[in-house]
Length: 476
Image 1 (tube, rainbow, N blue to C red):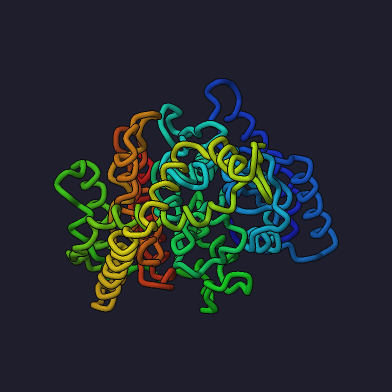
Image 2: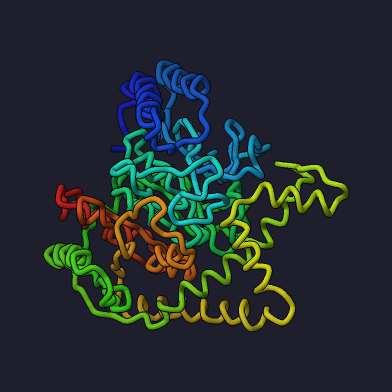
């Protein structure tokens, strides 16, 4: 478990932890059935960081709350030590000139970056099948996807390579793979964690999130990376609580909402039963469960797939072969643009750029993009009213199914529906966490807790309580 420890014990375990992480990484990557969770590593640099940790401890210097703990970061989070390719050929071999604020804060807390994790190209996907460097596989069943787009991060934690990893969220890309891999995934409130150094997909939705082996691991890491950053104008200066303290507070007296729209008749009855078991455990701990309604939920997917591609078409215009990344020479400037982007971008990114450009075009902007923003505001207002009415947390399934087989969802819209229970939190900007609540056909099921803006403390109270109440049942 991540947390404060005797600094005299930190340095030897740091060296061992980094060595063990690389050994485990190599073991799960070997052979034709390798999981392909990690794209880029620098073992000598990581080993040197571990040795430096030991020297600091020997000299009596404080090592930080995460001293000597190895981790991986999603390949769309900028690092100066390792490539940042976003899982795309258009940025193959690209190394950033600066690093993300979250990376800096983790280093200052003593954590050791050992690799960059696989992801859907430019974070556009729900399965990590759309990486230009090959699909990632689920450690619990390699024939199935680990979810996406942060599938490499969730898989690395589930495969016991690291105890925590950084991912990114635009429509559920931390919580959904965490659910598929049986680990904890946290999406903070929009603005709680700096986006500086996160390669932009959809700027009004993008966030850096955390995958952890336990709730405590995720809470500790979020505590480290959260807080105002002058490099990100959207980051808030709200004080960051000690999220670890949420473990001591429990859920007695809290009101938990169960929205009917997240439990449709088409949902697998066994999955519904696991969710209801989790709610029963929360009742036994003193919480009140209240049936609620969020009537605009069914509009979330179409709204998301207008807003996100629209912003993506603008953000990805910079990848044209002129300043950085791939350049495919042509007969002129326009031909060079066409060749570079056609060669560098995969089919899913191309699809979303085309869709986004269409909805922003003359004659369609008001009919699509403006209307989608109006509905987005309606979704956010429904959450606001629900929390204002005395609901402390909202509980839902994280995903409508367990992890599906590779290649099972060839239809784009069917793939998009994998995020049907997660995109609402991104549209509203509220925090959410996925916690393992059981198994269905041997595969993990995640339960999702949503809280009001900047009330991660309530979210973690519920997550800690649920994790403790279910115990080993959450993993069988």
